Length: 417
Image (tube, rainbow, N blue to C red; front, side):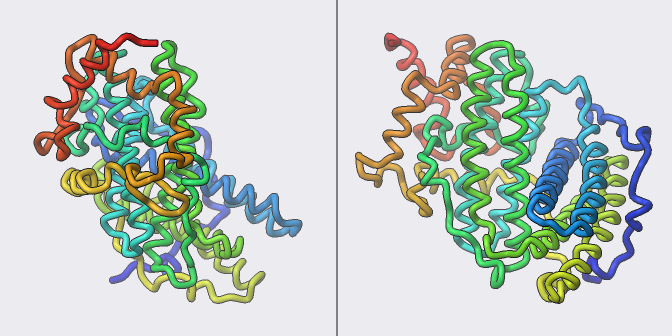
Protein backbone atom coordinates (compact mmCIF):
# COMPACT_ATOMS: atom_id res chain seq x y z
CA UNK A 1 0.00 0.00 0.00
CA UNK A 2 1.27 3.50 -0.85
CA UNK A 3 2.64 5.44 2.12
CA UNK A 4 1.00 8.81 2.82
CA UNK A 5 2.31 10.39 6.06
CA UNK A 6 -0.82 12.51 6.44
CA UNK A 7 -2.77 9.27 6.81
CA UNK A 8 -0.42 7.77 9.39
CA UNK A 9 -0.42 8.06 13.17
CA UNK A 10 2.39 10.13 14.64
CA UNK A 11 3.68 10.75 18.16
CA UNK A 12 1.74 13.56 19.88
CA UNK A 13 3.92 16.64 20.18
CA UNK A 14 3.78 16.70 23.99
CA UNK A 15 5.20 13.15 24.03
CA UNK A 16 8.20 13.95 21.83
CA UNK A 17 10.62 15.47 24.35
CA UNK A 18 13.24 13.17 25.89
CA UNK A 19 15.53 13.06 28.90
CA UNK A 20 19.29 13.52 28.68
CA UNK A 21 20.10 9.83 29.04
CA UNK A 22 17.88 8.81 26.12
CA UNK A 23 19.26 11.63 23.94
CA UNK A 24 22.87 10.65 24.64
CA UNK A 25 23.04 8.03 21.89
CA UNK A 26 25.52 5.19 22.10
CA UNK A 27 28.18 5.73 19.41
CA UNK A 28 28.61 3.16 16.68
CA UNK A 29 31.85 1.16 16.36
CA UNK A 30 33.80 2.89 13.61
CA UNK A 31 35.61 -0.33 12.66
CA UNK A 32 32.48 -2.40 12.05
CA UNK A 33 29.76 0.12 11.17
CA UNK A 34 28.34 -0.12 7.66
CA UNK A 35 29.50 2.94 5.68
CA UNK A 36 25.94 3.75 4.73
CA UNK A 37 24.81 3.73 8.36
CA UNK A 38 27.41 6.47 8.85
CA UNK A 39 26.21 8.37 5.77
CA UNK A 40 22.55 8.09 6.79
CA UNK A 41 23.40 9.69 10.12
CA UNK A 42 25.42 12.46 8.51
CA UNK A 43 22.62 13.20 6.05
CA UNK A 44 19.88 13.33 8.67
CA UNK A 45 21.99 15.50 10.95
CA UNK A 46 22.11 17.99 8.06
CA UNK A 47 18.38 17.67 7.40
CA UNK A 48 17.57 18.45 11.04
CA UNK A 49 20.00 21.39 11.08
CA UNK A 50 18.29 22.80 7.98
CA UNK A 51 14.88 22.35 9.66
CA UNK A 52 16.09 24.41 12.61
CA UNK A 53 17.69 27.11 10.45
CA UNK A 54 14.56 27.45 8.33
CA UNK A 55 12.27 27.72 11.35
CA UNK A 56 14.52 30.33 12.92
CA UNK A 57 14.38 32.43 9.78
CA UNK A 58 10.60 31.99 9.62
CA UNK A 59 10.27 33.10 13.26
CA UNK A 60 12.43 36.17 12.57
CA UNK A 61 10.10 37.17 9.75
CA UNK A 62 6.74 37.05 11.51
CA UNK A 63 5.22 39.07 14.35
CA UNK A 64 2.49 36.50 15.03
CA UNK A 65 3.21 35.25 18.56
CA UNK A 66 1.18 32.04 18.25
CA UNK A 67 3.07 31.15 15.07
CA UNK A 68 6.40 31.95 16.69
CA UNK A 69 5.50 29.68 19.60
CA UNK A 70 4.61 26.85 17.23
CA UNK A 71 7.96 27.23 15.45
CA UNK A 72 9.78 27.27 18.80
CA UNK A 73 7.98 24.09 19.85
CA UNK A 74 8.79 21.93 16.84
CA UNK A 75 12.23 23.53 16.47
CA UNK A 76 13.14 22.33 19.97
CA UNK A 77 12.20 18.79 19.00
CA UNK A 78 14.32 19.09 15.83
CA UNK A 79 17.22 20.08 18.10
CA UNK A 80 16.75 16.92 20.14
CA UNK A 81 16.53 14.78 17.02
CA UNK A 82 19.74 16.33 15.71
CA UNK A 83 21.57 15.56 18.96
CA UNK A 84 20.41 11.94 19.08
CA UNK A 85 21.52 11.43 15.48
CA UNK A 86 24.84 13.28 15.55
CA UNK A 87 25.85 11.77 18.90
CA UNK A 88 26.09 8.37 17.16
CA UNK A 89 29.46 9.50 15.75
CA UNK A 90 32.13 8.10 18.10
CA UNK A 91 34.73 10.31 19.70
CA UNK A 92 37.57 8.15 18.38
CA UNK A 93 36.60 8.90 14.78
CA UNK A 94 39.05 11.57 13.63
CA UNK A 95 37.97 14.73 11.83
CA UNK A 96 39.43 13.31 8.63
CA UNK A 97 37.53 10.04 9.00
CA UNK A 98 34.31 11.97 9.55
CA UNK A 99 35.23 14.14 6.56
CA UNK A 100 35.50 11.09 4.31
CA UNK A 101 32.02 10.14 5.54
CA UNK A 102 30.73 13.60 4.62
CA UNK A 103 32.18 13.32 1.11
CA UNK A 104 30.83 9.80 0.67
CA UNK A 105 27.41 11.28 1.53
CA UNK A 106 27.92 13.98 -1.08
CA UNK A 107 28.96 11.52 -3.77
CA UNK A 108 26.39 8.75 -3.33
CA UNK A 109 23.53 11.05 -2.32
CA UNK A 110 24.04 13.31 -5.33
CA UNK A 111 24.49 10.41 -7.73
CA UNK A 112 21.26 8.74 -6.59
CA UNK A 113 19.29 11.98 -6.85
CA UNK A 114 20.69 12.71 -10.31
CA UNK A 115 19.93 9.20 -11.55
CA UNK A 116 16.32 9.57 -10.45
CA UNK A 117 15.73 13.22 -11.37
CA UNK A 118 13.29 13.92 -14.23
CA UNK A 119 13.85 17.68 -14.58
CA UNK A 120 16.79 17.95 -17.05
CA UNK A 121 18.09 21.23 -15.63
CA UNK A 122 18.02 20.01 -12.02
CA UNK A 123 19.66 16.74 -13.12
CA UNK A 124 22.42 18.71 -14.85
CA UNK A 125 22.96 20.78 -11.70
CA UNK A 126 23.31 17.57 -9.68
CA UNK A 127 25.70 15.94 -12.16
CA UNK A 128 27.78 19.12 -12.27
CA UNK A 129 28.46 19.34 -8.54
CA UNK A 130 28.72 15.54 -8.23
CA UNK A 131 32.06 15.56 -10.06
CA UNK A 132 33.37 18.23 -7.71
CA UNK A 133 32.45 16.40 -4.51
CA UNK A 134 33.88 13.25 -6.06
CA UNK A 135 37.22 15.02 -6.40
CA UNK A 136 36.99 16.31 -2.82
CA UNK A 137 36.79 12.70 -1.60
CA UNK A 138 39.98 11.96 -3.56
CA UNK A 139 41.83 14.98 -2.11
CA UNK A 140 40.88 14.24 1.50
CA UNK A 141 41.74 10.54 1.04
CA UNK A 142 45.20 11.54 -0.14
CA UNK A 143 45.53 13.88 2.83
CA UNK A 144 44.66 11.00 5.18
CA UNK A 145 47.27 8.78 3.56
CA UNK A 146 49.85 11.59 3.71
CA UNK A 147 49.29 12.81 7.27
CA UNK A 148 47.93 9.76 9.11
CA UNK A 149 49.12 6.83 7.00
CA UNK A 150 45.64 5.31 7.28
CA UNK A 151 43.77 3.42 4.59
CA UNK A 152 40.92 5.72 3.40
CA UNK A 153 38.89 2.80 2.08
CA UNK A 154 38.57 1.61 5.69
CA UNK A 155 35.92 4.35 5.91
CA UNK A 156 34.23 4.08 2.51
CA UNK A 157 34.74 0.31 2.02
CA UNK A 158 33.96 -1.18 -1.42
CA UNK A 159 31.08 1.12 -2.30
CA UNK A 160 32.51 4.41 -3.52
CA UNK A 161 35.49 4.87 -5.82
CA UNK A 162 38.30 7.21 -4.82
CA UNK A 163 39.95 8.81 -7.82
CA UNK A 164 40.24 12.10 -9.67
CA UNK A 165 37.04 14.04 -10.36
CA UNK A 166 36.83 17.56 -11.78
CA UNK A 167 40.08 18.86 -10.23
CA UNK A 168 39.32 21.03 -7.23
CA UNK A 169 41.75 23.72 -8.37
CA UNK A 170 39.58 24.20 -11.48
CA UNK A 171 36.29 24.41 -9.56
CA UNK A 172 36.73 27.97 -8.32
CA UNK A 173 34.26 30.22 -10.16
CA UNK A 174 33.20 33.84 -9.90
CA UNK A 175 30.09 34.05 -7.66
CA UNK A 176 27.97 35.19 -10.63
CA UNK A 177 28.50 31.78 -12.21
CA UNK A 178 27.12 29.71 -9.33
CA UNK A 179 23.60 31.19 -9.40
CA UNK A 180 21.17 28.91 -11.24
CA UNK A 181 17.67 29.32 -12.61
CA UNK A 182 15.00 28.57 -10.02
CA UNK A 183 12.48 25.74 -10.27
CA UNK A 184 8.76 26.44 -10.52
CA UNK A 185 7.31 24.47 -7.61
CA UNK A 186 3.77 24.90 -8.92
CA UNK A 187 4.59 22.51 -11.78
CA UNK A 188 7.60 20.58 -10.46
CA UNK A 189 7.38 16.87 -9.76
CA UNK A 190 7.17 16.19 -5.99
CA UNK A 191 10.38 14.15 -6.21
CA UNK A 192 12.19 17.16 -7.71
CA UNK A 193 11.16 19.29 -4.73
CA UNK A 194 12.42 16.62 -2.33
CA UNK A 195 15.68 16.29 -4.23
CA UNK A 196 16.37 20.03 -4.11
CA UNK A 197 15.48 20.39 -0.43
CA UNK A 198 17.64 17.38 0.42
CA UNK A 199 20.73 18.45 -1.50
CA UNK A 200 20.56 22.03 -0.18
CA UNK A 201 20.53 20.72 3.41
CA UNK A 202 23.32 18.22 2.75
CA UNK A 203 25.66 20.72 1.12
CA UNK A 204 24.86 23.37 3.72
CA UNK A 205 25.88 21.06 6.54
CA UNK A 206 29.13 20.16 4.76
CA UNK A 207 29.87 23.86 4.34
CA UNK A 208 29.16 24.47 8.02
CA UNK A 209 31.21 21.46 9.12
CA UNK A 210 34.33 22.58 7.25
CA UNK A 211 33.86 26.16 8.43
CA UNK A 212 34.03 24.92 12.02
CA UNK A 213 36.56 22.07 11.99
CA UNK A 214 38.95 23.14 9.23
CA UNK A 215 41.01 25.19 11.65
CA UNK A 216 41.38 22.24 14.05
CA UNK A 217 44.09 20.72 11.85
CA UNK A 218 47.65 21.38 13.04
CA UNK A 219 49.69 21.40 9.83
CA UNK A 220 49.28 24.19 7.31
CA UNK A 221 48.66 21.90 4.34
CA UNK A 222 45.65 20.24 6.01
CA UNK A 223 44.32 23.64 7.06
CA UNK A 224 44.79 24.86 3.51
CA UNK A 225 42.88 21.93 2.00
CA UNK A 226 39.92 22.42 4.33
CA UNK A 227 40.02 26.13 3.54
CA UNK A 228 39.99 25.57 -0.21
CA UNK A 229 37.28 22.90 -0.25
CA UNK A 230 35.16 24.85 2.25
CA UNK A 231 34.98 27.62 -0.34
CA UNK A 232 33.73 25.17 -2.96
CA UNK A 233 31.06 24.00 -0.53
CA UNK A 234 29.96 27.65 -0.24
CA UNK A 235 29.68 27.68 -4.02
CA UNK A 236 27.65 24.49 -3.92
CA UNK A 237 25.16 25.93 -1.44
CA UNK A 238 24.69 28.95 -3.73
CA UNK A 239 24.39 26.59 -6.70
CA UNK A 240 21.71 24.40 -5.11
CA UNK A 241 19.73 26.91 -3.06
CA UNK A 242 19.14 28.99 -6.19
CA UNK A 243 17.15 26.03 -7.58
CA UNK A 244 14.52 26.58 -4.85
CA UNK A 245 11.36 28.43 -5.85
CA UNK A 246 11.53 31.96 -4.33
CA UNK A 247 7.79 32.35 -4.92
CA UNK A 248 6.86 29.58 -2.50
CA UNK A 249 5.37 31.02 0.68
CA UNK A 250 6.79 30.51 4.17
CA UNK A 251 3.93 28.10 4.90
CA UNK A 252 4.49 26.09 1.73
CA UNK A 253 8.18 25.86 2.58
CA UNK A 254 7.34 24.72 6.10
CA UNK A 255 5.03 22.04 4.73
CA UNK A 256 7.67 20.84 2.26
CA UNK A 257 10.39 20.74 4.90
CA UNK A 258 8.25 18.55 7.14
CA UNK A 259 7.20 16.31 4.25
CA UNK A 260 10.81 15.91 3.13
CA UNK A 261 11.81 14.78 6.61
CA UNK A 262 9.03 12.18 6.52
CA UNK A 263 10.19 11.08 3.07
CA UNK A 264 13.82 10.66 4.14
CA UNK A 265 13.19 8.91 7.45
CA UNK A 266 10.75 6.55 5.73
CA UNK A 267 13.33 5.89 3.02
CA UNK A 268 16.27 5.26 5.31
CA UNK A 269 14.48 2.82 7.61
CA UNK A 270 13.81 0.51 4.65
CA UNK A 271 17.32 -0.95 4.48
CA UNK A 272 19.10 0.13 7.67
CA UNK A 273 21.04 -2.86 9.12
CA UNK A 274 21.95 -1.14 12.40
CA UNK A 275 19.20 -1.78 14.96
CA UNK A 276 19.87 1.39 16.97
CA UNK A 277 19.89 3.60 13.89
CA UNK A 278 16.78 1.96 12.45
CA UNK A 279 14.89 2.53 15.69
CA UNK A 280 15.94 6.18 15.55
CA UNK A 281 14.72 6.57 11.96
CA UNK A 282 11.38 4.94 12.83
CA UNK A 283 10.85 7.10 15.90
CA UNK A 284 11.86 10.26 14.07
CA UNK A 285 9.43 9.45 11.26
CA UNK A 286 6.59 9.23 13.80
CA UNK A 287 7.63 12.63 15.18
CA UNK A 288 7.80 14.21 11.72
CA UNK A 289 4.38 12.85 10.80
CA UNK A 290 2.99 14.93 13.66
CA UNK A 291 5.03 17.98 12.59
CA UNK A 292 3.68 17.60 9.06
CA UNK A 293 0.09 17.46 10.30
CA UNK A 294 0.69 20.59 12.39
CA UNK A 295 2.19 22.39 9.39
CA UNK A 296 -0.86 21.35 7.35
CA UNK A 297 -3.18 22.92 9.91
CA UNK A 298 -1.14 26.14 9.85
CA UNK A 299 -1.45 26.34 6.08
CA UNK A 300 -5.21 25.90 6.32
CA UNK A 301 -5.46 28.51 9.06
CA UNK A 302 -3.18 31.19 7.63
CA UNK A 303 -3.41 30.71 3.87
CA UNK A 304 -6.77 28.98 3.47
CA UNK A 305 -5.10 26.41 1.23
CA UNK A 306 -5.53 22.66 1.09
CA UNK A 307 -2.07 21.28 1.92
CA UNK A 308 -2.90 17.94 0.34
CA UNK A 309 -3.17 19.69 -3.01
CA UNK A 310 0.55 20.52 -2.71
CA UNK A 311 1.67 17.04 -1.69
CA UNK A 312 1.65 13.71 -3.55
CA UNK A 313 -0.90 11.09 -2.57
CA UNK A 314 1.93 8.63 -1.99
CA UNK A 315 5.64 8.96 -1.35
CA UNK A 316 8.02 9.36 -4.30
CA UNK A 317 10.39 6.44 -4.91
CA UNK A 318 12.35 5.90 -1.72
CA UNK A 319 15.87 7.26 -1.48
CA UNK A 320 18.71 4.76 -1.08
CA UNK A 321 22.37 4.99 -0.28
CA UNK A 322 23.94 2.62 -2.77
CA UNK A 323 27.05 2.25 -4.90
CA UNK A 324 27.06 4.44 -8.02
CA UNK A 325 30.41 3.56 -9.58
CA UNK A 326 29.26 3.08 -13.19
CA UNK A 327 26.98 6.13 -13.18
CA UNK A 328 29.74 8.41 -11.88
CA UNK A 329 32.20 7.08 -14.46
CA UNK A 330 29.76 7.93 -17.23
CA UNK A 331 29.35 11.49 -15.92
CA UNK A 332 33.11 11.85 -15.55
CA UNK A 333 33.70 10.79 -19.14
CA UNK A 334 31.25 13.35 -20.54
CA UNK A 335 31.24 16.34 -18.17
CA UNK A 336 34.61 16.73 -16.46
CA UNK A 337 35.53 19.92 -18.38
CA UNK A 338 32.29 21.81 -17.61
CA UNK A 339 32.19 25.05 -15.66
CA UNK A 340 29.52 27.66 -14.96
CA UNK A 341 28.63 30.62 -17.15
CA UNK A 342 25.89 32.48 -15.29
CA UNK A 343 23.04 29.94 -15.10
CA UNK A 344 24.42 27.62 -17.78
CA UNK A 345 26.99 24.81 -17.86
CA UNK A 346 29.63 25.02 -20.58
CA UNK A 347 33.05 23.48 -21.35
CA UNK A 348 35.73 25.73 -19.86
CA UNK A 349 37.63 25.64 -23.13
CA UNK A 350 34.68 27.32 -24.87
CA UNK A 351 34.79 30.43 -22.65
CA UNK A 352 36.32 33.59 -24.11
CA UNK A 353 39.83 34.28 -22.80
CA UNK A 354 38.64 37.41 -20.99
CA UNK A 355 35.90 35.55 -19.09
CA UNK A 356 35.75 36.25 -15.36
CA UNK A 357 36.36 32.55 -14.68
CA UNK A 358 40.01 32.91 -15.68
CA UNK A 359 40.62 36.11 -13.75
CA UNK A 360 39.01 34.58 -10.66
CA UNK A 361 41.17 31.48 -11.04
CA UNK A 362 44.25 33.69 -11.32
CA UNK A 363 43.33 35.43 -8.08
CA UNK A 364 42.57 32.47 -5.83
CA UNK A 365 45.26 30.15 -7.24
CA UNK A 366 47.94 32.85 -7.48
CA UNK A 367 50.11 31.13 -4.85
CA UNK A 368 49.15 27.57 -5.62
CA UNK A 369 46.28 25.28 -4.72
CA UNK A 370 46.33 23.15 -1.52
CA UNK A 371 44.31 20.46 -3.30
CA UNK A 372 47.13 20.07 -5.83
CA UNK A 373 49.86 20.35 -3.20
CA UNK A 374 48.36 17.44 -1.25
CA UNK A 375 48.75 15.17 -4.27
CA UNK A 376 52.22 16.52 -5.06
CA UNK A 377 53.30 15.91 -1.47
CA UNK A 378 52.08 12.30 -1.39
CA UNK A 379 53.71 11.56 -4.75
CA UNK A 380 56.95 13.09 -3.48
CA UNK A 381 56.74 10.92 -0.34
CA UNK A 382 55.59 7.57 -1.74
CA UNK A 383 55.89 7.81 -5.53
CA UNK A 384 52.13 7.56 -6.09
CA UNK A 385 48.84 9.19 -5.27
CA UNK A 386 46.18 7.24 -3.39
CA UNK A 387 43.29 5.75 -5.36
CA UNK A 388 40.66 3.07 -4.99
CA UNK A 389 39.53 2.46 -8.55
CA UNK A 390 36.96 -0.31 -8.26
CA UNK A 391 36.08 -0.60 -11.95
CA UNK A 392 39.45 -0.30 -13.63
CA UNK A 393 41.55 2.67 -14.77
CA UNK A 394 40.12 6.19 -14.76
CA UNK A 395 37.70 6.63 -17.70
CA UNK A 396 39.71 9.61 -19.00
CA UNK A 397 43.20 8.73 -20.22
CA UNK A 398 44.95 11.89 -19.04
CA UNK A 399 43.77 11.22 -15.49
CA UNK A 400 44.83 7.58 -15.40
CA UNK A 401 47.54 6.97 -12.84
CA UNK A 402 50.08 5.90 -15.44
CA UNK A 403 49.54 9.20 -17.29
CA UNK A 404 48.93 11.54 -14.37
CA UNK A 405 51.83 10.59 -12.11
CA UNK A 406 54.59 11.38 -14.67
CA UNK A 407 52.90 14.75 -15.22
CA UNK A 408 52.98 15.39 -11.48
CA UNK A 409 56.62 14.29 -11.31
CA UNK A 410 57.55 16.72 -14.07
CA UNK A 411 55.79 19.50 -12.21
CA UNK A 412 57.66 18.62 -9.03
CA UNK A 413 60.96 18.91 -10.86
CA UNK A 414 60.14 22.44 -12.01
CA UNK A 415 61.60 25.24 -9.86
CA UNK A 416 59.01 26.80 -7.61
CA UNK A 417 58.59 30.55 -7.35
